[in-house]
Length: 391
Image 1 (spheres, rainbow, N blue to C red):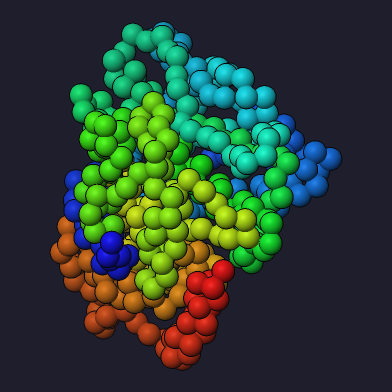
Image 2 (cartoon, rainbow, N blue to C red; image 1 turned 45 degrees about the vertical axis):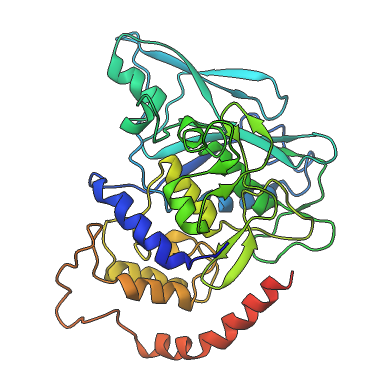
């Protein structure tokens, strides 16, 4: 199957998806709750690398800050008898738990995380949470169940608006927590695993808007963005849950950045000693579930690619980073390919129209220092990418 360039596919999809976004938009925040973590992230006596595990998890959450859905705030109202309880599996015990009247900020998901022994062969598990509620106000009820996403309330859902969810990690796995240096040998990459489980929280295999794009009895995903990224319907794994197959078929590859082909992050398996980042196909699947994207280069999510976005990319150039730092292709660093994506969309609005540029600015500025850095970047990043393909 032909793999299409990441920037070109996502630029088209993002431009189409974001036309209807109300203004202003806010980047998605994933707020991790360690109340029921069993000490895996918070107690060095339980996990000697608890601090490293927590840092790696928080970094994985930043991989999704490019999403820009306007999720409504959830807050109970005793006066109106609108109360609720978040329902999820406690990460430390596996038992179902009801957390009463959780306040969920706007544009935020709360994810309860922890660790426990899960047996050999399993690295982690997770998904979106449920809810129990008593209400007198229909609008409040829809806020709890859809977060204000109209497509999540439709008869054939096209969107997904969870309050958050839960993830548990196997405390006995041989984890690699470093977020820059790759894993080696028998190590299981924690960053890859956390990103994978967060995709399940966001609806991969766990939402009606996912299931509605898999024809009955089929093992093919037909979402518009995913089929554009893959070059046709995407084969699925043959395991099924409440909402159909949960993963792409084993061995499905897609593009990371602009040049590297990699096994998709939402393939069901993770080979020891390897790292998997979000690929073009993985991000396209999120778009098909109903999550929305800004234009490549719009680091601050203000609806246009402009000078402030250039400053963010310039300040992070040559370093690890996320979307807010200028990493438009999700490969974990800010490099020449991100700069070229920003330059290609400089001056564009979400509508695809360009606004007048500041006086004296005819294109993305290239200060001498950055121009020199760019001149040598091809060789530097070319070597890094060759090493990554060889793992």
